[in-house]
Amino acid sequence: MPAYRYVAKKGPQELIEGILEADTRANVLTQLVNRGYTPVEVTEASGSSDSAAVSRVKVPVRELNHVTRQLASLVRSQVPILRALRVIGDQTSHPKIRAVIRKIEEDVRQGNTVAQAMGRYPRVFPPLYTSLVHSGEIGGMLEEVLDRLVQQADREEALMGKVRSALIYPFFVAGVGILTVLFLLSFVMPRIVRLFDNFEGVLPLPTRILLTLSDWVCNPSFWGILGGAVFCFFVGLRILGERGYLVRDRLILKLPLIGPMIKQVELARFARSFGLLLDHGIPILHATEIAVPVVGHRVIRMQLSRLSGGLKDGQLLSACLKGMPVATPFLVNTVAVGEESGKVGEALMEVAGFYEKEADRTLGTLATLLEPTVILLVGAIVGFIVMAVLLPIFELSSIVR
Image 1 (cartoon, rainbow, N blue to C red):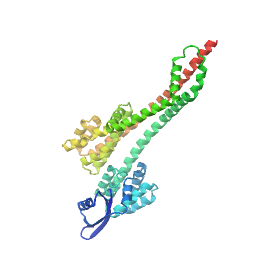
Image 2 (cartoon, rainbow, N blue to C red):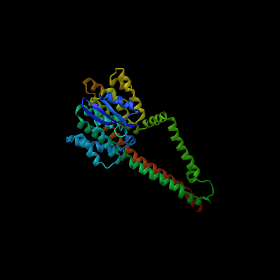
Image 3 (tube, rainbow, N blue to C red):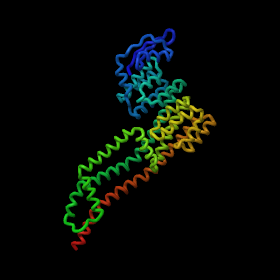
């Protein structure tokens, strides 16, 4: 959208300037009136293309967490917000986040709130982030809100770090095993086949299977067919769109250990985000619309998206959750207790903590089982290859004797 530079009256005498993005000049006038300003002048900004380009910027989550931690520290030290933004913009080494921070500083200097300025960059600051910052500005709790955002980011980063650490070794072993098998089938086996040219009689079944696999791997047509099948699979997913991804996510959710762990992680993420929003005064319907998109798994997100319909009909949150397959008895009962005591936000945070611990335990079990399973599987495949090569050699030895 194009950007428009405006001059407006705020009160009887005060003039403010700023930049707004809108489809037309008339929409800018409407936004100014809705904010209680009296428009004086609205012109298209000469740097609108640069502003639009910055608004499409996406930065790494780790950079956003670093900026949030710096901003929380500066606000806690009672540094004025404009100076804090300038300090962060000067200190950050990431060029994209530096450009965004400088644009936010400019917007705040021209009369916008920090939340309004951040809202122009949804690919950098998600709705959960900007809503909490908005509530912190209104309630005078910006420092507390930023601290909570930092804590949540640290928890998610720690959990994702554990997932990566648990999977790196098994995937490394599996990758090395696959490369070893491909090397044996494509390079070693064609040279060993010559030993069997003068073999009288029928080769053992394992050897015949191995020779067939070796022929496939050495045949370019096999790789063409395999590549075409993989390409068709992903194209089919794209053609089917959301239905195809839903089928995939349903299958993932049914996998032993992996399915329950994903469910625990997503429920913890949803409950913590929802609880944060409620604790900071966000209305429950608006909080639902913000917290549900935080869930990454499509099937779980689709089920939780029905919450808003039940809440609009006047049902309690616990009653809405009760009919959902994804909602566990612990989640429903804890929320019900929170509703009785008027502390739904705290109840949801308790749920989040519980499921984060459960996900950690499930991840430990998965890592414990996955490592030896992969090693045994790779060893069994390599052992089969060795056996298939040695069997006809043993038979040749017996014939020579």
